[in-house]
Image 1 (cartoon, rainbow, N blue to C red):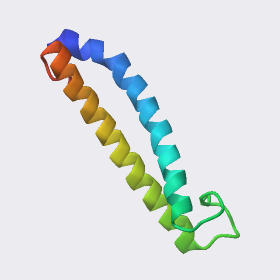
Image 2: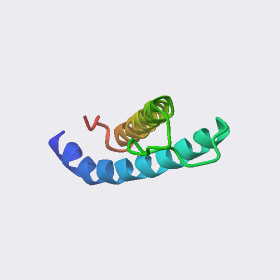
Image 3: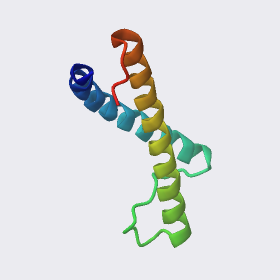
Length: 88
């Protein structure tokens, strides 16, 4: 069981990086679909309202968390199928 966890570590790191890239691309698409022509605002962008900055941050956080959970769960499920043990 410990060997499966150790072997899963580098795979988990790679999947984490992949999930970040996927979540970033998804967030940009969702932000545009919501009618925003510009990139999402930074917290220090003085030309954006509090509402816009906080809305973007909440949406981005939700998308990142959802994508990360989906990728992590998929990786763990695949590891169980291939190795016979759950990596967590």
